[in-house]
Amino acid sequence: MKKKKITIEYPLKKASVNVLWNSISTPLGLSEWFADGVTVNDTEYTFDWDQNYQSAFYLDSKQPEYVRFRWEEDEGTDYFFEMKIERLQVTGELALVVTDFATPDDKGDLILLWDKAVEVLKRKTGI
Image (cartoon, rainbow, N blue to C red; front, side):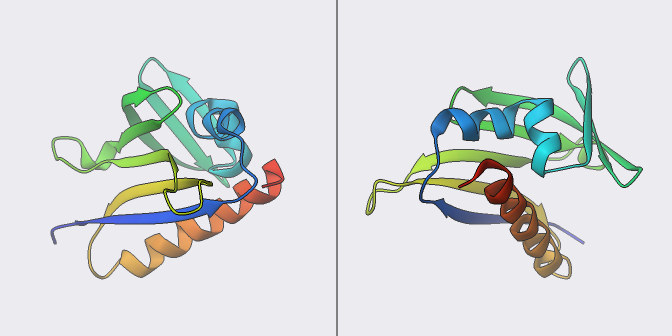
């Protein structure tokens, strides 16, 4: 089944660009909130969730704006996941904008996973 693009915006009222950037772009930062552990071998990032491992390949980044990866299972496709730091025009506050892809059947679960991960990010960084 074909995956569709999903974009989720998480306003982060008290966020610091530097803290957010380190949280989304470094193995140590990602292991604080996104996964239990992260190892890097060249452009391959291996994420550990309770000893369940999944690999993704680093595609691109622009400091301190966004970082983009592609899951190993999506190799050869246009699918990716991206974490982007944006300033909201209305409030001037920062937001983490997540772009990901999911099948219609998996969309709800994927959004719940991102919601949970961002809640951990907020708690760990004091946002």
